[in-house]
Image (tube, rainbow, N blue to C red; front, side, top):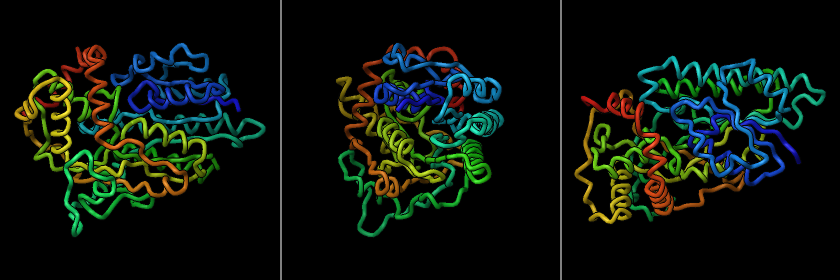
Length: 378
């Protein structure tokens, strides 16, 4: 079956993995990577597929309604996988307007263009799909408690069930009420509501997913794991917010891409699916795992770089705990994470150490200014 699919934000971290998967797995599809190429978008992420006959890159701002509507017509687009977003909480605190514009108005621009184009066709919405990728942060925060008999394992080889119950027996479900706390999560919540409204009002075939923290190759080093890998490599301080007690659920990015593939093709219209790794970690413990792994792969003494840990003033409104329950996705569509955290983190660290030129290229110039602004005087 031939299809024409737009993947927005396809030059970014998660988007590039989704583009690569779709281009390689579905040679009969035309995959259009639409990206504005902001600081976090990098076409070098996709060098291995840029010459494939079923791949096309289009530089475009998702807020440009006219340009996107024309693209829909020219390429006869029948599917949209929407990942383009401003996504860093710290940046949203400093500049909430940009997040509202891109994440809310940009999503609305795509929805309206898709609506007008698809409704102009004889078959209208038949065979069409608008798939919106969101975050677990829209749900707010969970309390931390330790269920009786469960002790946080602090090990990369602990079972998923142990990690899933390590810090509490309450989780985010698809029915959990939205309670966003940061400008970033508020902007994503707004975009989620618009997507659902376009289904409820116009009958557009939409799906929304909310995913936990991703890690893996090609992630811009403003995010925790690549930031710390890079800093350890250069013997720079490792800035840890507060006491490092905040808990997040972690998922290897290629597993997220597989979930997106399954949901795009087999998910039910108007449904929400949570995507998580059943893999909760305190920030300080995941940092220690990263230090141990980097030191091992660089041939340094175990624990040599623990002294780089530097506690800094906590982020405003820093949520204590996120934990996704993705049982619905597992039961209905058969997806589950494929990698134990031990495998995923070593694979990730090894990739960054083997691709130091990629890392050096994107951590020069503006990145240095950003880093100085974010962590100076904290």
